[in-house]
Length: 421
Image 1 (cartoon, one colour):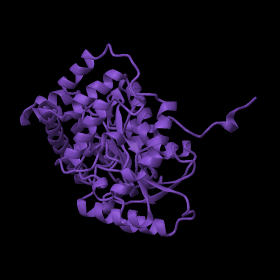
Image 2: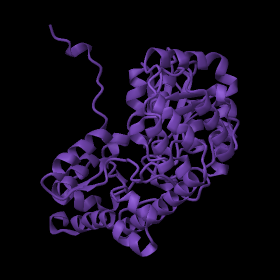
Image 3: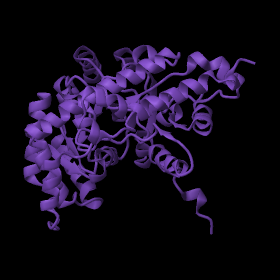
């Protein structure tokens, strides 16, 4: 009996797949690993020490999360983001990724709106939850941001306006590295309020705003914004799998019980030692605060250098404002690339990996049309532990793996096999 017709069309996450492929290739050749976005920095020593001390803790914790952790998370976001986070409306989960899916799974029917480009897992998650997925197309001119006009036009022309509309908004952005100003958020909030849009604001990179100026959408649209965050980016603890979600007061009576239901029937709780260590991170003592400040300095400096180098060789790249990603546009090279048999972002990334040893993720992974010659570059292939302690002079050598990879891209573009036929 064949089951093929009954299986969901869900494939391996492209970010995880490129990491595994890079591992395989690196065994036999030089690979510049720009494909997988994982923080290069070690978890702060004080936070790691709490995990070690609490490793014996084995009991199940409450489904919603350990109360001292929820209290620390709420206090942290009230201080950092000037928003009304309350511990009774915080849900702790095994990464923000699963918390975003839990929100989608809480609805029997909904329309999920995504911005192209947006993170690779949003669309598969929405489809797993059985929802319709719609997209609005951003562009390089807006530095890949959603604009109020785009959102308004979509809301005005929805085919099924009776369905709840869930907009997933991620900023600072993966894959773009760009973010939203206070004015831009206010203008978006006005449209969201007018059409009753429910927003999942994925602010996992908020603490890595390069100038420490992240503004949460919940400040301007509190009644309709669910905010997700976690330890993976600003605390370097991706593999610990701890995320947090805050439900606004206006939605908590109806939505929070459903989210707790999803959590109780799936992950039950996050590991007790991890939650206790996370509480130490969210208390944001002097060690952790200094660590985050240093991360921002390093990522800002390297990100700007990387964007500058790509722009110098005609690869249009917006300056990063947060996180550790760039979204270079190779459109300037289209004629030469097409003459070499490259007309899609998948072909571009495949050839770059094969011929230059540079691993990027194609724009199609982020919902972009295949003919758009764009790709995501994650500039984290450097020694983060060394960078935290380095002098300015020492950073030049530490940044070398990233800059060498950019030179490999520049050399590949200028090689004779890409000459116009």
